[in-house]
Length: 165
Image (cartoon, rainbow, N blue to C red; front, side, top):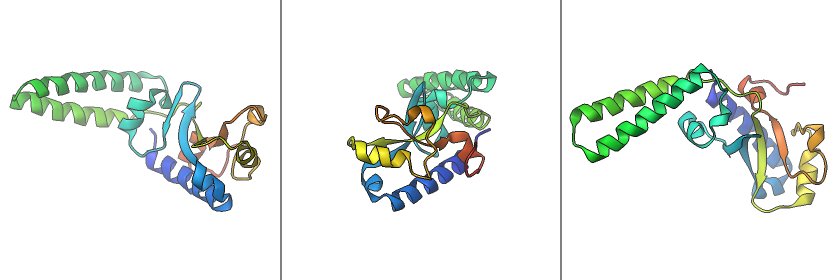
C-alpha cells in the first residue's frame, strides 16, 4: 500500500529545498513521477495517477482488480449519463467506493522516480542540478546528452527515508 501523502510531501520538501538553493530551478523546473513506462505530475490523487500513469503501480492482482473496477466505473458512469435511474446512480456510487478502496491496496512500482522536467531547456541549469547534493542522479544519466534530473526513487520518499544507497 502506498502512502501517496507521505510520498508527495517528502518529494515536495526536497524539491522546494532544491529550488531555494537554485532559484533558476524554481522558475524553470517542475516535479513528476516517472519511469521507463511513462510519467505524470506529482499529486496526492491516486485516482489521477491511476488514470494518467498506471505504470506508477506494481503489476499485481491488486492492480488488475483496480483496472476491472475502473472499467466498471466508466461503464456505469456512461449509463447514468443516459438514464435518470436512481438504481444506476446508486450503483455508480458503490462502484466509486469500491474503486477508492482498491486504490488503497496498490503498491508502488520499484522503477518509479521523482524527476524534474523543465519549461525551457537550460543545459547549464540541468548540469548544475545533476551535481547538486539534493539530487541523487544515477551515474548512467550524468552525461550532457541526458536531460533527466532524478531527485530520487519514489520508494525513498514513500518510506520517509533521506536517500537509499
